[in-house]
Image (cartoon, rainbow, N blue to C red):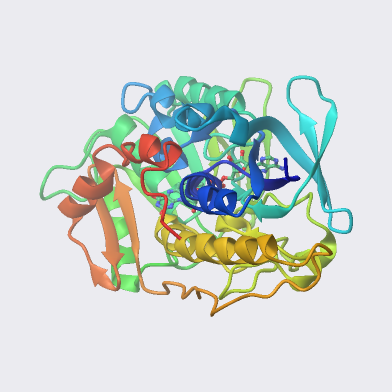
Length: 412
Ligand SMILES: Cc1cc2nc3c(=O)[nH]c(=O)nc-3n(C[C@H](O)[C@H](O)[C@H](O)COP(=O)(O)OP(=O)(O)OC[C@H]3O[C@@H](n4cnc5c(N)ncnc54)[C@H](O)[C@@H]3O)c2cc1C
């Protein structure tokens, strides 16, 4: 039997899962015809995929969108494949040695370190938000507990601060405002009898950086309609949980507020601690050839960057879905070339042109705000009811099985 080549994917979310399915369905069979044996490893610190898109609603109450509906075991998506060609490793990638072409993984069950050698490597470990309620911070149980904790606190809250004027902050504030305060009548700008003071704080002079000024203003009007006030040009300097469970928040303008619930929703941190410093930009994102989506050449051959962890990424699924076909095409080219290379592996010759990625820089985003919403596709503003229909209705949870099962995995 020929040597087994490990195709290792770090991160089993939107990016990693799509690549895994494309590889198993379309690339591995072609390599097999050449007499090459490959084994796919999907490494993730969570056993379950998490649909973070739905978290702004699930954090408010299980009655609106049960948190259980946002998770699906990664393993469930792979049962149709021959078990001898893939493995799912539940563990956290701790380090990456580009010289020996190995990654070190801390296994969740035993806490032992497993080293895994790779023939090809995909970095797809994404980013995390400040709150574990809105992104995975290790195993999915941590996120589930964070969502349940917020459900409990929000149920009786009379004061809430959400920090962050991006879509997560705006959606969370909208959901909380709608749940606690209801919605203003047709000709009113605010609910007449609000239960809670809900405040959205942003350090910018505008909400929703991706969307135009008029849509951002419309977002504030819709927030007001569910009893949310917006404070601009202020940031949260620090926060501390008090002994009574409330949170005291210190603001950059010197004010100090104590609230029942504080939700930090500004900014993201790339999950790239395991990546050597020379392969990251100064914000921690992995340096990526923005057209071929291969990692920087100093990472070595057959290393790819997928999804939000790359410095090429603008975030969001529409950019992800545009990038995956490019990635799998270039992965297939490289692996076929490696399979036909001389035994020393040096003279790998790539035939034909690479497939190139063009980012979508248009104004495209959908932001539900309670029963309403703002958004645009390719620069065209969408009416509020369409945002509700497309996203606000159920936060698109139908995409969870589609992603885990790889229904949309592209043909390279
Ligand atoms: C609250 C929220 C709402 C969003 N809503 C939308 C939306 O409505 N529309 C839209 O288009 N986009 C939305 N996004 C963005 C979208 O979720 C991301 O673009 C997408 O999830 C990126 O996928 P990814 O595979 O690159 O990374 P991620 O989804 O971030 O997944 C990374 C995976 O890597 C794993 N991982 C991380 N570090 C390690 C490690 N060291 N070892 C092992 N495993 C690791 C994680 O457990 C995770 O499974 C939202 C994001 C957030 C946070």
